[in-house]
Image 1: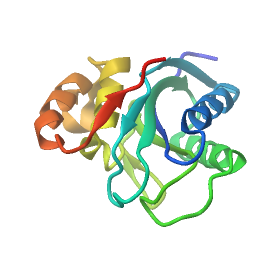
Image 2: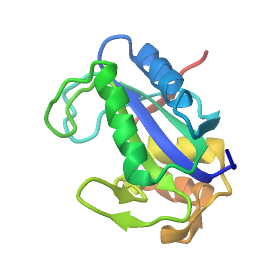
Image 3: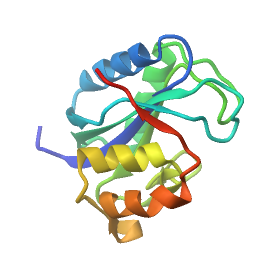
Length: 168
């Protein structure tokens, strides 16, 4: 496999064995032909957004290389979510596992199924922090800024979002 495009994904869980769901999701993602996991951020405990009356999340951002196109990659992630036992619920409700494509190098799109970069990226401090951890100087073309710049711009605006680092 050639190195492929840089793809940043976010993972989250706030049901059951949260860290275990993330670990299993990463294992399954790494077994996809044509995907190479490069680096993952630290685990973060975060406050829920949207529906706030639910348990805190464990979140992580992972950088991978792939030549799999975004729609197909998202379909593979949805299958992993299903395999790991994600139950259908309302938008922003609790979930066993959530895997989102945040940024896909060289591609901007806005379809019914997928928006790249992720439309909520700038509104989720954990995503900005995680992306900054794995590749701070990566340039997000649509926003004409690096992850590091986007993270520091978001700190004040998103200060109500609690992030606690989880020590291994």
